[in-house]
Length: 326
Image (cartoon, rainbow, N blue to C red; front, side):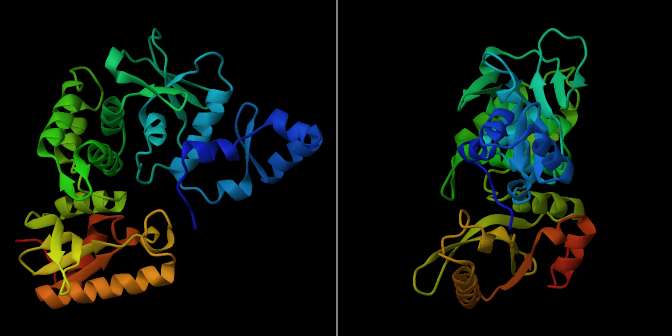
């Protein structure tokens, strides 16, 4: 099971050449381990064990590469941007794949790639530069904008949803003033001349901080592509014994609730409230039964395999009698 990774955890996984040699690993064996895939070379003088690498999502792998670049840089280190800044802020990047580390280099005429690092020529305002845990990076607002400009629409929406959620949602309550302020702050930075500004504006307007997982964000994108419009998000339901539940989607015309069911909802200890996966599955069944009983509505569930394309999600929903208007 793959896992999420925080900066402190990533630093413990990062192995320097000096550490490995000091632990008694000969230079020849180091080279052999890299060639055999037992060690993954992240950047100059930085490695991670293949077993640890295999347990990480792409965001965690990219965070390791970011830390490796920082470790190889003198002084205050580079200023990270785009997807590299996003992983430092802990923002999700749906299906990001293997991407180079991205940093800002002021004064160059063109962006270029050197040693697996994209050096971008960007002019930043003072409030667009921040520092987190010893790493210099673009601010959350600027990071969300840059991912919205340059990422896929699905990735950009998931990232923007999470960034918006951090500043405008507490528990299940959305602060409409904070929501509007965030959108205005990001959009004012989308100046004329920046590549991808048109998509960025669409992403920021589409963003919704109520989405709790990137799978929910991508689900909204697919529903939009399918022509759905009459549905609500994060609907409160009071159970038969007074329990308060929240449901991801409510399709009003078909009287059906929709839930995105990522595997991590049951297997990732950081996402579930139950002590183990088995208990989480049973608790979810009781929750669904209670909601069905008090509302009389049906349930439709889908996972990551169903949101890869609009057609895949459309077919899944149709199996539960949920279809777009038309």
